[in-house]
Figure 1 (spheres, rainbow, N blue to C red):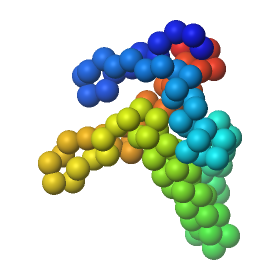
Figure 2 (figure 1 turned 180 degrees about the vertical axis):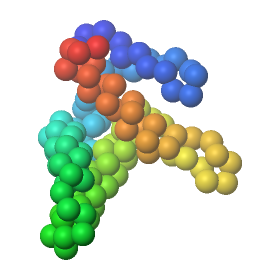
Figure 3 (figure 1 turned 90 degrees about the vertical axis):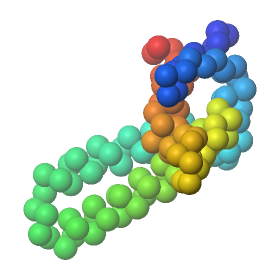
Figure 4 (figure 1 turned 180 degrees about the horizontal axis):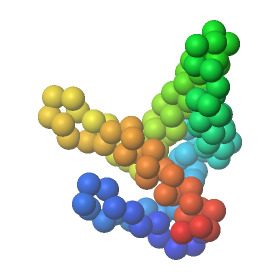
Length: 119
């Protein structure tokens, strides 16, 4: 991870120090950024599996609700960590300027692939 991490955000090409990003991500997730990303992927796979089950069963409804709640919590933690790590401006609801949490998570996903050597 000795090269510069390049990414595009809102039609602008940007560059980051990958080690700095890693450090800030770990600081803002109590060292669990990679574990949280893994857990989020597991929750998403489970949600697909739950979607195949009988949607009228109370147990299925409860499992889906718990899964969605856990996913939202992790997405929030990861989005906030990414916004901090990449020094993004959070979305200003009055002006529309800034970065949405979805954009932050997308950039974080690209960074994770880069850090794992997949990019």
